[in-house]
Figure: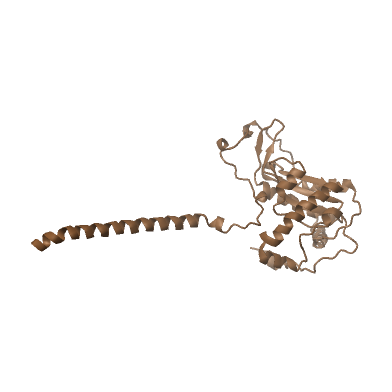
Length: 299
């Protein structure tokens, strides 16, 4: 009994230590689990690639009105659209087949050309090309595009300086070895002489939201997809009139170019196209396109 009475306080102390150790271990496990969960939730940040231009992200998703600045137009304020009969040209099957082959042949000759002639191009031709791009479909017919056509030599040179400065950083740091290696066979680099030489530069901006004459904001649904479709029509229109270009998405240049061209904050640069006739000594890589079976699935 004497021994038991002596050991009882000791056992109580040991028991308290064991319980305390178990509580500490449990807290550490919860912290580790919480950290792991946090890391999982932040996976997109871990995979963040610095060469992805933040200015090119789509802003289609609209938050609740209470989270938005400014006065947004209510859909009830817009007038009802008049619907009219649709009429279209209908061709015999033989003519359809012939036209489809001719158009494919013409578009299959389209190439990205980096050697552009300084020879002047009629301004009205460029106007019609832009008109054609403006026929593209858009979410809720918001037409969320702005085409900035630059022919002024000094402005073109300022654009070149901005693009080349950022592109050198892209090639040396942001893009990574794999991307730079993949581009090496195309013989591209950060030097963009065509930005000075081409008679026109067309900078395509997407409008993340519209601004009405009364100052109210209008939602632009699927603005990036809509403007991308218009760019496809723009490329086809250029090919149709015998002009060339190279599709350029100058990473991290959007904000500077937007300020240079005095565009509003709701416009984000999507694409930069130097436009003109091909230079007499122009060359292009001998690339082959995928056959139909590789790009089409018929069900």
